[in-house]
Length: 216
Ligand code: TZP
Ligand code: MG
Image 1 (cartoon, rainbow, N blue to C red):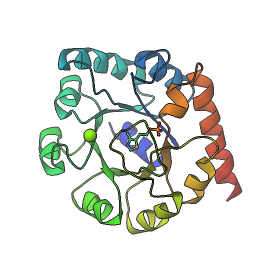
Image 2 (cartoon, helix red, strand yellow):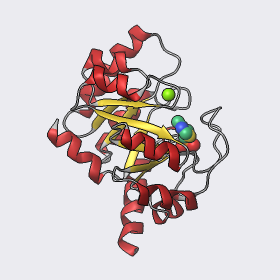
Image 3 (cartoon, rainbow, N blue to C red):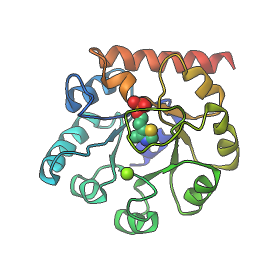
Image 4 (cartoon, rainbow, N blue to C red):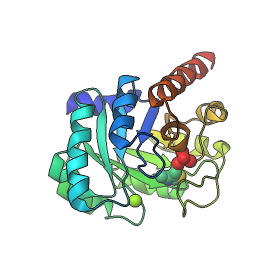
């Protein structure tokens, strides 16, 4: 777990699954992304039964192995059932202190935030990173709201000591503004899982972020 947690500080590209958008399926997407060098995977599944989720989460855990952090979106119970590395929760999910009590001190908890106030509160409550967004408008999450713009990232980054993960409407064309904006890492859902070649897309994102960082 120590090894896994230390990955949090070096992550550039973060995969979030979406079985509704995926061309080849969630398991294939995870396998491809990890093979391409992705070091964090969030299992985000809104439609399957709890039973199916536990079975699939256990398979994803195996695919992540020691290579990638494996988090479960929303479902602390599913994370506990498969001994995932942690969870990613939103403002309307289980309160973070309850999630922490259930998961214990060593698991990773990421929290979605939309602004600096929520971000500060997340850090105070013991979140290990924040997911900030939506950075741009997106149709992947219906209730995501309006994009806050990449220029909003810097103030959040400077106010926090935990990593800031940018999410929402991010693609290869606008990644530069997100990284320059101050994000520690970025999530791209549709830009990756809608592709026929998730390995190639993931590699291209990782290389692109590397290249942008080396320029600044
Ligand atoms: N939370 C905020 S925006 C979003 C989530 C889960 C969806 C991001 O998907 P995409 O396809 O990368 O815009
Ligand atoms: Mg949620």
